[in-house]
Image 1 (cartoon, rainbow, N blue to C red):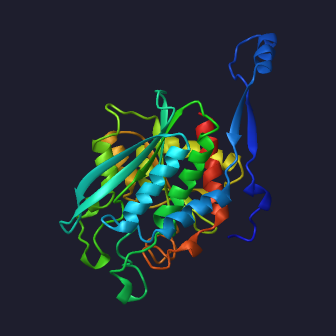
Image 2 (cartoon, rainbow, N blue to C red; image 1 turned 180 degrees about the vertical axis):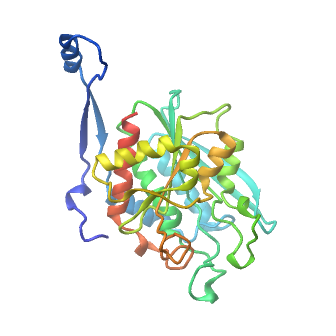
Length: 335
């Protein structure tokens, strides 16, 4: 937890934004009449302590690797929790083949809020954790599974807290929260080949080809990945800028407006083959990735404990969860 975390932010607050009509060319009296009919947008405040507890709960099951008891137990918890928040929950059970030929029993978990609305936004993250600590400084750990506190659980924790808010506060668009499985089951570093990119993001690949509703469409998607590290730097990731630069600008503008410009940086980051790539590529839905990137990191732009046994609860900072949660809530409630 960052020393600068404001205790008052533990309580839910409401941010009220007045949206005035901006049409031009009308008489001033008419503008004044319209201004008097301003519509208030109520944005629920994000509870960082709640999000942190959601991260902690996921880790309590152990590494969430497909085909394990911990994976099954966590899936049941996620489904039950999202149902508790009055979402329409669909679990996509599917089988997929890993890089080594192993068949994985996987689950994409989709929670739809106001599914009757045609105008929709996707919020997503992956909920599985990596079976290999192949970046660990101790080579003896390279075939051990990781807890994945930041790499997976942080994004899910933020989305569960957003879902908790959506139980009581409704944006003007429908929201689909999608928790992708089998994102991190790619080959270990010492066996990786150049052409093995598509062994990652198996859950998002499956969903993009088999959406939970026939002819499903959304205005855009926001992926959260590795969003819990202290003092994060969210660069404008390469594939996000390639496929959906206007959506990147939308999110980064909102972040700056509400005071998070020091974290959402106007700098281009590397190209990360992540779940958003397959949403763009196969479903043609504009999708962007909010992901911590550090060009000076020794771990390929990722955080210090990426794919190591050190990616535990100590990797998570409440204030970073707050930054991302407040930004995403502000974006979807302004739609």
